[in-house]
Every structure is written in structure tokens, then in C-alpha cells.
Length: 441
Image (cartoon, rainbow, N blue to C red; front, side, top):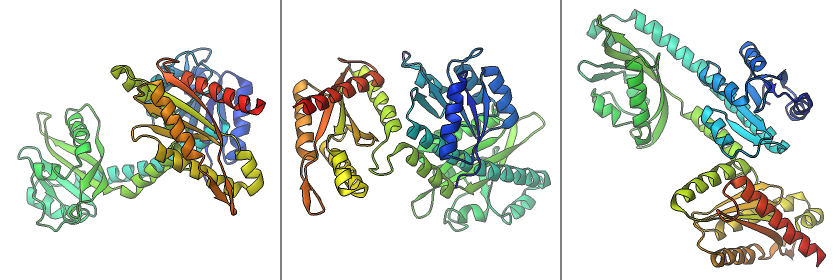
């Protein structure tokens, strides 16, 4: 069960505020709510109450939501997740702007209540996990500070102490470029005492290639006093060839001229925590039944696909699928069999699309497909025919064969529209026109 959540809702529409409180309370009854109706009121309230989550509107009477988000994400309150909810639909770059400012999620009004609750739950879990890690970081920082104060500048005495301190301790002499590592540091990676050289380059070669640049930047920013402390999460290669995540915290010793001469710190294995965070992120972005990308991830991926297509001047096809006889199957065979049908349709869709295309589930019996680098209408028709033939293969339910029928709508970038919202609306409208025509027949 999620612990009691403190949620601040910032919206000048008091009716919507009450509706949100009622909706969230129904699914997350452990929540405690605080409300603000202006931007300045919200900033004061958030600094006072330190909530676990913020739901923020864009249009506010004084300062707008963008400014509120910018102030919070540059403040010590940047760790608090923000969900932006807005009725503004005419600015297609608004979502990108908020995400660049640091907002964790962006929903348009009228929002899907199921999606909102899923986002809230996922962000609260991530916040709880980050809070736990912060406690561990603070503990390690205090430990390093205490140890640093007690260190004697005599080299041999320090090396004796370092090998008996619990945890992965490292001491980098910036004057000689030598790194002394505790035995525990080496053991955490599966190495024996003499298997790792006390050389900076040897140690840096153990860092995952995707993390090296970020780690070097963290070290440089700290040693040039652009950052108050060294704090970085990196992957290190273990003796068995696998990589594990480590949290690095460090403090420098400075000479009388203010130049750093030594960097001393600790590393802590956070692999289990990172895997939990990755799992929570996956829950927030993938449909739990079919394992297909959900609405949030489909939007994000398709927007990136459109950005790439703009540069290469290519076309993108959007398909909106809705199953025609799913309600009948649910009513006849039960929801358990209905779930099996949805999983089967998802599997077939994944097997029928091209490797560089993208398929997602929007909820219920609705699916979306994004077709990259679409060459012509002929190719689009061929893909639709292949999907139709594949999906409508009979499915056996309780000894009886059922054929899955569906209605399909299409739109093409940039012919029909140049943003994902409009493309989806056109495809949705096209799909319903086909469904209506079937009912008339």
C-alpha cells in the first residue's frame, strides 16, 4: 500500500480542484490535499508543506504555470514531481517546454482519469524510492565528512585506515594521478587486492562507456567549484563482465592556493534500487496486460518520430484500430477470455508491423500504430491489408473459433497534419466513420 501522499493542486478553477480531490481520493484514499489558486500562493504553500506531488495548471491569474515550474525546478524543491494539466491545445510546443523545464508528466484536458491515476501512482512510487536513496546519500555524506575530518595528512596512516573502513573508499591523489582503493572497493566488483592497478586510467576504463562523459563532467564541475559536492551515479564493470550501478560521493582537499590536491570519497552499490526505479518507470510507460507501450510512451515516441521526419522530409502513417466485436466476446466468454483476445491482438500487431514501426495500446480495445518512412498510399494500403489478414485469423475460445473484426482509421504526416494530437484526431474520426458505415450496412 502506498504511504500517505501529500498532494498540492494548483488551479484557478475551484470546481476542477474539487473534482481532482474527489477522483484521487477514490483511488488513493491515503492522500492529504492542499490547494492554491494562484502561482505565488502555490510557491509559498509548496515551500511550507513540502508535498510528495504537485498537479499544476498552465493558466493562472498572476504568474503562469511555466514560471512556477521553472522556479520550483531551480530551487531545492526540484525533487518534487510535477504533473501539468492544461486545456490549451493550440500550442504544440507547450508539452516540450514543460518537460524541458523538468515537469515529469503532461496531460491535456479533458484528461483520461485512468491515465492520471496511473501517472500519480507511478510518480509517488518513484518519489518514495528517491527519498530512500536521498536518506542513504545523506548518511554516506555525513560518514565521509566525519572520516575526512579525522584523516591525518600522513600518507601511510591514511592507507592503513582506508583498508579497514567499511564500504568502497577511494583516494585520488590529483598531483600524481594515482588512486588508492580500499580492499572493500575491489571486493564489491569481484576483484582481489592485487588485480586492480592504482592508476586513474585503469579505474576509469571500468566505467561504462555511456557514463564516462557524465562522470568526468561531474568531477570537473566539482573541482572547479561549479558544484558544491561530487555526486554521480555510474556503472562499473565487474570481474565477471557484468555492470553494476554505484553511487559516488566525494570531497576534495585543497592546498593553501585553493587548488584541489586530493579527492576522497565512497562508492555504494545501488543496483537493486536502480532496477526498482527502472521497473517503476516501465510500469508507467507500458500497458500491464499486453506489455505494449501505453498512450504516454506512444505520444513521446511518435513526437520524436515526427521530429526526425521533419529533418529527412519523410512521411509517417498513423493507424487507429478499434475492435468491433470485443464487447460481444467479453459478454459471451467473460473478461478473462477478453483479456486473452487483447493479448493475442497485441502479439499479432507486433508480428505484422515493420521493425522500425511502433504499436501501442490506448486502453480498452483501442490500438495505435505509427508507420515510419511511408513511401506511398499503395504501401499504406498494403500494410493495412496485411494487418487485416493477420488480425482476422480465427481465435479459438472455449472450443469455438472467433474472428476478430476491427475498424481502422488513418492519417498521414505531413499531408493531414504536422502534430501528433491532430493526426490522432483525424485517424480517430476516420475510424469512427468506418465503424458507423458498418453499422448502417
